[in-house]
Length: 389
Ligand SMILES: *Cc1c(COP(=O)(O)O)cnc(C)c1O
Image 1 (cartoon, helix red, strand yellow):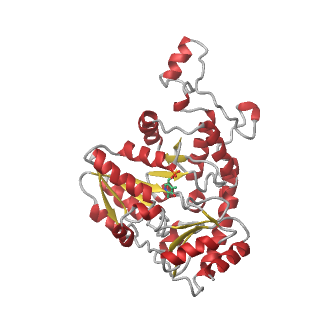
Image 2 (cartoon, rainbow, N blue to C red):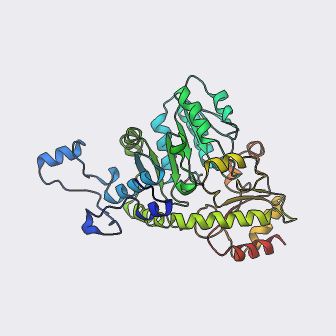
């Protein structure tokens, strides 16, 4: 069969013209309860012997349309949509892990994931070894007999480091350890971890999938059996279900994902090139730059290098002055929206880590994270240029 390009898939993913009167936009089903036709049907649906819906926390047709779309885009068997990226991350962990198990994870990544792993160590005796994730062998070296999950985040927050997904996944497969990839920064437009051998993909749909800084959501994609285990376990018991109104918004965002990512990729590459020549910039972190330490693997596993830049302006003072001066760029946390967002990372999201943790993960006081939006690149550049001056 002809394989469609990503943009085509993104526009049509999850489409179903047989139900809902052929509506091109899947309807929002706000119902928290669904009635049964008769006793036999009710019992069959409730006991999962017949497909259907019965209670809001356990799904509805709008949520299912989003799950179908995401499974298609990531090339997975099934998907589970949740209330946030963290709901997806904790659901993945609580599906794969139990007390006494061990995790290997990157020393530099989204700080709430780091803190979550510390939390489950204290609360549930699930220990994590944090490694340099740009070295796949480090996963192998850290693995123990009780290791039950390899966690990968690539490109990573905030230094956009790249982990070799195929290599880590194959080490995991040999040892019987599932590899989970946080694909938030890349999106399935730029990178498809399941095709590279990963077992499970998770997303903060709050970022590029939604794309308009107007929702909080998460998704998990992987083999049908694992997704069902998550649906009937972590999702059902901890209750982080996605609201149908939000599932609809994510679906709407996904339709333009291909188009938006093309512009994010282009704008970020151009700004990275210009910024690294600017005298006030100490360092630019972007996997598309030929001197980025993980450029080669980025070229191999990514279709585009994404919209996130790490820009080191040297000192906390310089970073603060920069965010006070920008006018087109917006000083805000988060990323992945149509608007360019900047944040002094060490002073904010990574302030929850200790100075030592920040230094060992390479987050200097002057590091800015720029989530490059889809505005005109010349307007963003002028704004950045003025703010650096
Ligand atoms: C934002 C983010 C998360 C958490 O997602 P929420 O939707 O905020 O819960 C996880 N991983 C990465 C890489 C992120 O950027």
